[in-house]
Length: 237
Image 1: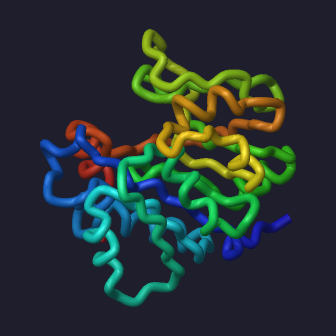
Image 2: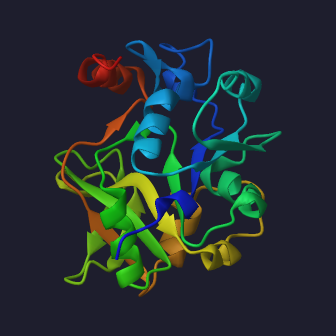
């Protein structure tokens, strides 16, 4: 089976306030932080289009007009904005974008991290498992600052704990998901909530699977991680 990723919507969550990164990036939303001669958003979109995606939904909030103005040039993909008037969190941002999502499954990804993932393999894994949720996972030596995931032998997710602490090495959430549309019907009634804290721990069942990938998760959420990301990716033109 070969996935037709042109028909799969991608939701990028980039509406957050980015407070932790402000000592290093204060004049723009963090998704527009500079990496070499590009913004982090440019790098994400180039990776997505290289993998065949064409339909991108940006969940924007803080300094959203700067993000919207960033697209005053021609591009080969379709951009739609889901605009937040107040901070909604990762879960609330996705919930608000529901009406714009046409495909099932669809991709959801954080706007402040990137990793090397084969999206065709990820899609086929999701379909073959008949999953309602598939979560990309990487192995980390320091899992304390991320969402730690435990799998069974079939790669079904047994537990998800966001920033549990006290844990060193393990599988962590890479912030990239494939979801069936029906999962949105299980979201809380609140407008503002977190996928990682308020949704995933409650929705995990026998149709939720973890897709393990090799390589390193790069994120720009803090000044220290941003500096490391610039070191690792700064040669990009």
